[in-house]
Length: 74
Image 1 (cartoon, rainbow, N blue to C red):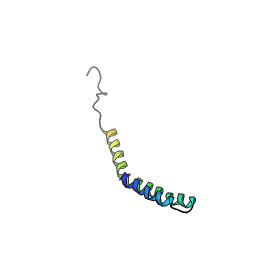
Image 2: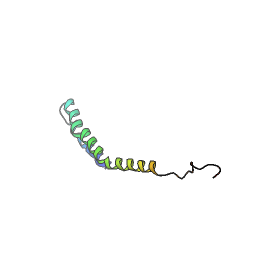
Image 3: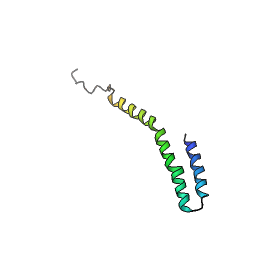
Image 4: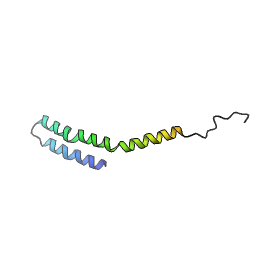
């Protein structure tokens, strides 16, 4: 997925460089490249973040087998 993101940024960077003004080039790069790509990567990464949160929650709820509740005389 990252190779597609890099390729998209390359294409948008070439389009921004070929713009006639610096302001137009910067706006082209931001509004056609960086902002949509950041939104896409954030949305595409949502399932992975949910799985990681669920895994962390399961790990914190799982009983540990460290025998910390036993006494010496048991």
